[in-house]
Image (cartoon, rainbow, N blue to C red; front, side):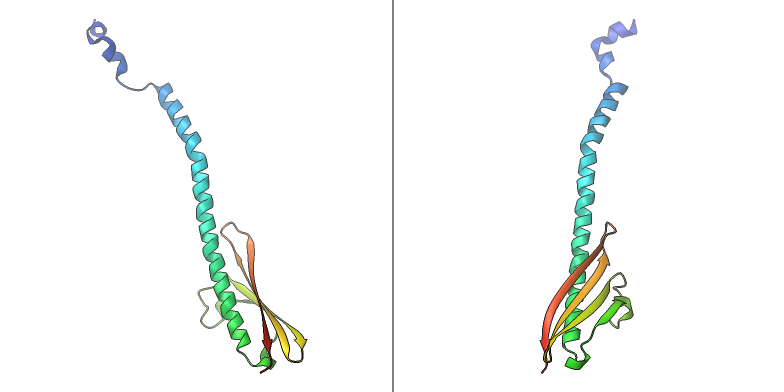
Length: 134
């Protein structure tokens, strides 16, 4: 008797479990690719910042190297930046300096900085310059 007095309004009080499950499935299907895009975008942004830092460190090392006396510009094996004075915040970055003597008055200097990107891959930034005897 109660059902008859309420009429059609009694049947429309909420969503059925099936309707909720279908809506949730559609939402999950749409949101999964969006979350993946967000993850990739954050990783790319982080990698750009890491690469910018590596480039700045390479430029700094290049300036230090070419400002040394000509005879003192020699190869340097791989070193950790954190061991250098003024670079203690950059322990995740390593560098090498390769010097090639082109002639008695000219050398090519190559500074390579390596680091790990946000996806766990080893990356490198290399700068090359020339110095001459003064």
